[in-house]
Image (cartoon, rainbow, N blue to C red; front, side, top):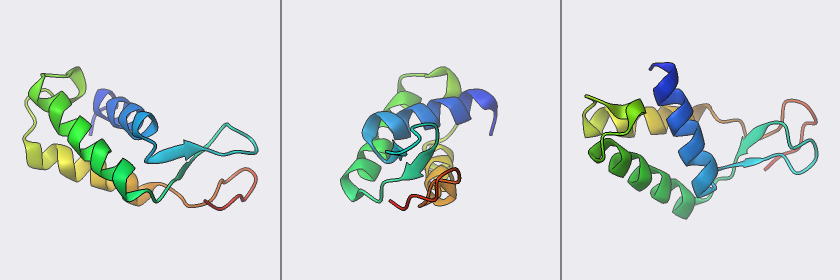
Length: 86
């Protein structure tokens, strides 16, 4: 996954609320475990691919979905700075 793809997915996860800023330090993002937000993130990412978004150029829908899943799976449920759990 290139940096454009990573940045785009990060933005989508933030915008949809699938990951949220730590409420204490605000400098790290943690997994929100919000099923509706995750569904919205998948939808927004696949729509961005259809629209030719820079981060998803020449990727298949399956690749985009896989990268979103990978990003969600790697999101921590606690802040590494202050140990706050989501």
